[in-house]
Amino acid sequence: MTGVQNLKAVRGNFLDVTRTISHPEEIESALRFIEDGLLLISEGKVVWFGSWEEGKSRIPETIRVRDYRGKLIVPGFIDTHIHYPQSEMVGAYGEQLLEWLNKHTFPTERRYKDPEYAREMASFFLKQLLRNGTTTALVFGTVHPESANALFEAASNINMRMIAGKVMMDRNAPEWLLDDAESSYLESKALIERWHKNRRLLYAITPRFAPTSTPEQLAMAQRLRQEYPDTWVHTHLCENKDEIAWVKELFPERKNYLDVYHHYGLTGKNSVFAHCIHLEEEEWDCLHDTDSTIAFCPTSNLYLGSGLFNLQKAWRKKIKVGIGTDIGAGTTFNMLQTLNEAYKVMQLQGYRLSAYEAFYLATLGGAHSLGLDSYIGNFDIGKEADFVVLEPTATPLQQLRYDNSVSLMDKLFVMITLGDDRSIYRTYIDGQLVYERT
Ligand SMILES: [Zn+2]
Image (cartoon, rainbow, N blue to C red; front, side, top):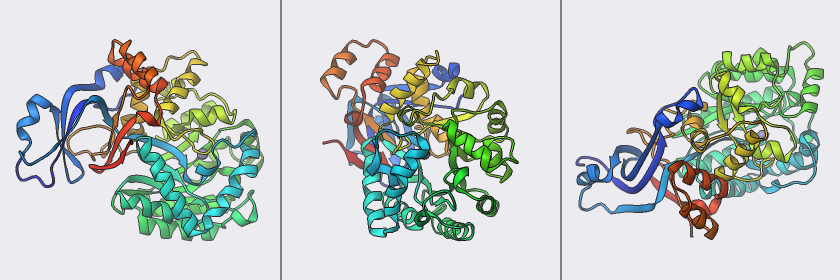
């Protein structure tokens, strides 16, 4: 390929999904597997993708080919719901949502007022994402703008595509962790001005959840959304039954929990609601009608005993779903492990989550759920070159099981069931190698 700047060539077996789907039955026809393929990258974008035989003549002699034959190269994983200031409290024992917040989460999040601490933890957090093959995430900060600044700075250093925001929270939490309606508006606005669309970074207006915002603050969130209609909204919805009862007490004038957000203009395309376990029929319909997104967080939902998300119903209602790890109520940063738990959550409801469907949700489906599928999610020409090299046989058990797998579906399913961070051999962001397993 001549006239192309800084060309990079990557060889190996590639798997991706070529188009978004509206029903899991469509997945096999949308799947693309290239055994011995070639990916050419320039300036962080895919410039050519196909078979090695067809493409090898395009590689100038001076270019070193990164040869990953024997591995599986897939688009970077997309985590649609995660809290970076909760890494240090994963595995906090014994509580369900509301007690867990008071006992563990709020005291931990208090530390992020210190910019130095926030920087240290932002760096730790990003390293965890990379070693788990996650190349894009939708991330909660704390109430402190310092937390969001630290995370955006760290992500900007590797030109990561990330969406994040500072929490808006002006009631029902300890006083030392509250903003107010006005300050939350001004601080969010300053962060949007500084970071939204700054390189690959994007901003999410982030009210923690309805119980910790006054109506005045939700009105301010609405004002932000009106002033910056291309930002995201990121919050929680219908995770826990006590939480739902509390929202009904706090907002008796609203029809249901989601109606609180809907009333303040916070539903819509690029509005992401984590959990959605105990939805009323009208809430399902409202999510569909407003083109909102659900983040399905299986490890968190099991860990906090919140309940089982009904993925099958989301497909039926034609609502976009992405997968979230929800660290620190979730118990892993790893998308393979998260999909493994998703499979079990669906088993308990009599639904068979296929390896391909799971893979879709973690890649192109996740990108679509965040409104980013024209930038990331597969290897189409022009897409941003974020990808992961998976090692299917990282442990003796994986090797044994892999040798006893006949189909691609089986191999992928085994990787989801037995995989973890050892399965992540290399991670690339923006065409650059950012993680190497040692
Ligand atoms: Zn969460």
